[in-house]
Structure formats: C-alpha cells, structure tokens
Image 1: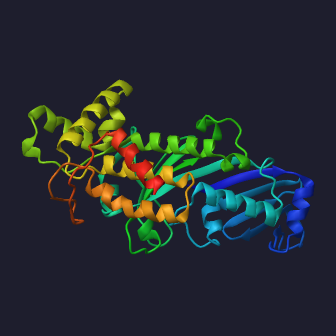
Image 2: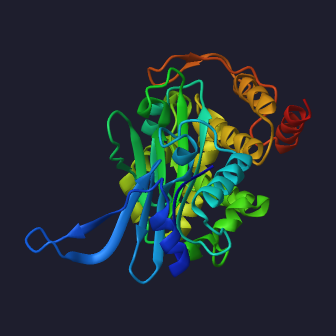
Image 3: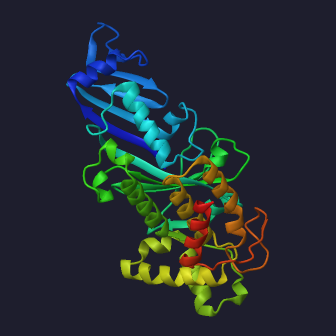
Length: 343
C-alpha cells in the first residue's frame, strides 16, 4: 500500500557507510570553471530511490518503496504489509538503515484495484474532493488521472493499468501526505511502517478520504422529481460545491448520495469503495495463494453487489449486477471477507 516515502537520518557514521556502499555511485555538484565542490551534497540513485548525503551527516532517502521492491520498474501490482516488511528488512541489510532512526517526512499510500469497468469512466464521474475540484494529473508517458491538493496532503486517482500498458483495468486511489501531523499519529519512523496498527491507520485515512469524494452517476432523469432533478444538476457542477458553506455541503452531499444510491445505474462510488476496503484487508497480510483467491473473488463481488438489471456505462461497455448483498450491508461484506480469508 505504501509508495513514495521521504525519510531522514542524521548520523555521520551512517552517512559515511552509505557513501562507501558499492551499490551507490555518488555525484556532487561542481563549479564548472573552478572545479570546486559547490555545496558538498552528494547524490546517488538506486532502484528508484534517491540517496542525498549532506556534509552535516544528514541523509535524505526518497522514492517509491513499491517500485524499489520491484527493482525500480513499476508499482502496478499489490504491495502488501508482508512485502513492506521484507522491503524494509532488505533496506536495512543492504544499506544499514536503522528503521528506528529514520524519520518519515512525506508518505504516499494507496491501493490498486482491478475493476470490471474502464477506470477512465470512473475518473469522468469525479466532481470534487470535499469542495476542491480535481485537476488533470501530469503523468509521464501514457496515463490518465485526477488530483486535488491541500496544504498538508493531496488526493490522486488514476488509471494505473493505462500507465503501465496492462491488459486488465486497474484503478489506483492514493493519498499523498506532505505534513505528517495531518495523519494524527505523531512522529512517524520507518519502523512504524512495519506495524499492522499503522498500516490499518493509513487504510482508515485512505477510506475516509475516499468517502469525501463527490461522484456523479448516470441516471434516468425522467424518473426524478423536480426537486431531485434540480439537486442532481446543481451537484454535478464542481463550481457549485466551492460556493457552498460547510453546512450546505454536508446537507447536499447526503441528499445527492441518497439520490445516486436510489437512481444511479453504475454505482461507481459503492462498488469501488468495497473493492478498496476488501483489498486493504487482504494487503494487511495474507499468502500469495489467498491473494490470488481474493482477486478471483472480485468479479463475483461486483456481479453480486447490486440488485439491478443490465445497464450500459459511459460508453465503456455492458455490466451486469445481480445482487447478493445490498449497499451498506456490512455484515454480508464482512462474511464474504471472512470466507475469502478462511479458504
């Protein structure tokens, strides 16, 4: 679940050992005219991680832990808590990083889910995060995504399958934390990323952020009453949310979500949240065999999620839901998850 991380270790001995590590080739900024070293800062790159050593002994290590675990190549697959633990133990063994001394300053955490629908259709359904309209993500190469930023964190939603040219549909929802205090955990050490409690804390934060999304849906407008139709068109416009007071947003969001639940044909919000929650539970720590079993259960979960007939989404294709458990039926969801974990 963890991705980008920036951690700092201030230790002269550790800095010296890092510079001498044969896997790292450090470079320094040099004045082209005089040949003098400009600031004494040395930098190296290895498997998507940047190692920056200051003369004071301050060391910054930043990059994607997920990509590092995949030899710096990609982060489209799952990255479970057990994988995170193995990754950090590898960093400790390879570079002598003490997880107790490495302070985390920035952290990204998110979940990749395989969907039966094209993630681009989900992106097109996004209106705002809270009152913040989404901007188009800048993605290197091929890709499509949306993002919304605040002073201490940002929210990113994107088509991960498209980014890495995967044959399957993969949607990623992610929270990028700039100021760790917004997590409500206190000082975060690399060691915290080893714990189940911190993993679950981040999962809760991620799902809470997802719940703050405002998402539209395709509805049969002729079936709406005049007040419902008015609400539907007001809430579909991102600019209207920026002009609402906190109380108005709270009231309109509740009414709009109820309208979408009752009349929406695609139910992206409910289906996607269920996928994220289930995958989060799975990533907490299961074997690869159980993870494969979970992935195969996703399609069954989607097919059985809603009690509705066939419908067509925004040009993506036909999806068929034949309800086994209803929206918000947490008991049935928990039973399904327990069944997956038991097998």
